[in-house]
Amino acid sequence: MKYLFLFVFGIITCSAIDGQNIVVNSDLEEVNICDEHTAKCSPAGWFYFKADPAGYLNPNNTNKTISASGFHHFNLLAAGEQDSSRDYWQTKLLCPVEPGKKYTISVKVSAPWANPNLGDIGFWFTNQFITASKDTLLQPNYYVGFLDAKIKSLKNGWFLLYKEIIVSDTASVLVIGNFSKEKNSDIIFKRYRDIQPISILIDDIQINCDKASPCVINPHMKDSLYALKRRHSKIEPLKPAIVITTPEVSIDTVITKTAHQVDTISINSIQFALDDSRITDKGVKKMLSVLSEKKEEIEKLEVIGYTDDLGTEEHNYELSKNRAASAIKLLVEEIGIDPKIISVRGEGISRRFEKKDLNRRVDIFIYWK
Image (cartoon, rainbow, N blue to C red):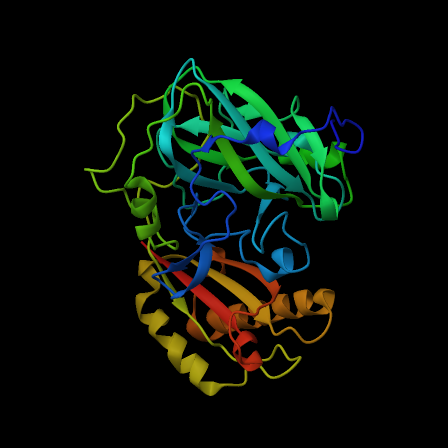
């Protein structure tokens, strides 16, 4: 394994990565307000590979770790408890990469628990967005890794990775994540063993064209990507007049996805008393009772618990899980929902609303067939 504290190859000057950056919103600071919930949910121009974005604007992750620059970064799940569980984010490049051309790629990385492992991050260049409704493992035969990257140590536990590449195929979409052929269970066993899941923090993603051969930027691409607001349903295609058509790259990919896409609906504001996980509002049962009439039309439910920012992060994380569990009990015992179609997680502290009592809640996402 290659760890940053063991291998630092040299100093990178800022001028070494100057150039024409073709990654939209590369510092992740411009935030998308998703149409489904009228709330911040992802960086503008970027798309999560599943319906519900994860690892961006999550207070458990982003607020306790300072970003490399600005206030936002990705927290990518590099190896989850399940072998198919990893995170991927993607965007369409402002102009496609072209075979034979030289590019300088760079990214800033950190990790929540230890120095980051360079095997946990890669760039995959392809020609289509990846969409899936279930946990998905992407293991393309060819992707750009950073095991041979030059490294510069930055402030607050961040590192800058930098390398030059020459691509062999035309591609218009960048996907970032862990594309290792190893199973997640093997990665965890070899490395942390007692710490799981394994995450890597990502910020300031750049792909710079060679100054001697600049790219022809599509002047409408950024506006087109920013105009796609939905983040809790399948990725909408760009308007045909704006799409850059390129031949498909032949890459073998292990990907799990359903034959159809799903929409999501959020039922918000299941309210809780301070430091309490009991659901006392009788109106909640009445609000959810409509689900009993449409149980056969539901593919899955995702239940997510939150707390306000009073108390420690550890305590609030457990409390958020207990609140989600209370909602599941209500859904199963009172509404009659099959527990097999329900997934649950606690996200800990939420600062989405200015009023603290609104942050003490459970959100239920309903995926219709």
